[in-house]
Length: 467
Image (cartoon, rainbow, N blue to C red; front, side, top):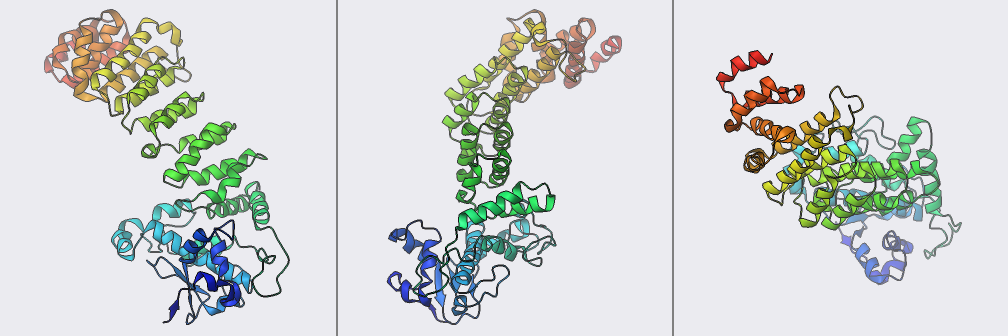
């Protein structure tokens, strides 16, 4: 099969000049020669090809055949000439772009297929859920363009971005098709209308169309929707699509939404997606997130911190959060601090204990009960602080024992109970005393749990007495 890479200086005379379109698909200026040449390498003209276009798995280029200059024979765009060529290029480039960014090589795909592509349709199972495909079947019955093959339907979604006549105002060394049309406005209006529709089916079509504008490392296609000021729901849907795309590019854009948008629902949607993106968020961005005056953002950021190594600056910021006026921020901070890496156990334990001590000494400041709670809020908070310390396991024992010798009253008893819950046998006599005599019923219950952790059978008579 004769494959020919069209030289840049021959584009205007090959296939009636339309091969130049491959250069312009991602280039804002025809004069950007370097970018144009890079794009040209993605496509090759195959005079023997029986189809308008074709992509062979693993290649870093797709092929265009002679019939691409005639009437379209594809799934979606029914155009001729430049419209057929343009839509075919988008279609085959979608096949190539997804395969290379997801699988890389055919050998790599085969090695991962059993665990990541159960239905063998070339689309990763986790991506199929994002793209509204059935990950158990090669084709999805609700597909708009191709119900028998999800991979083909995906390429058709990208192809559908082409608007017939959108390139007619340009000179393709051939007359005709000269009525100008604005592809961006036409496409945007259609998607906007779908996204704002109250009909579920039409709304879903808008979301699918929006998803088709993105790629693993390119979210520029939905930028206008992320910035749309006319209706926050459009921005919300764009963020929903953005959250399904992994990587640093999408993470950076999500952070910009959190820092710049003003709608709480949009901010929350972006914030909730931070989980699992810790490696893509720089330390200075973590600090900025902790400074955002939004409880949802703070709590989601604390969720990120649980999975990363923190530095001195983040540790100081967390120490301030342990003094926050909102009790749930303080307890969430304790949990995040207990699981974060990068600082010593003693430092973390003492910071959490300082917060617990404040609650023990000023229980009335938290109110009698939290909303929907059956225990006093202060007791609930102390329990959460204990749980945070328990997350650190044996590394918390020595710092606790050191503080226990200095602390008395309610806080000292909580230290004893926490040690008991860690299985520290040295506090056994003190636990017996708390479990059988203390006036605080909630502390007695926790002390009994601690005795259970230690597992000393001699405690049974005392436990019966406590009942």
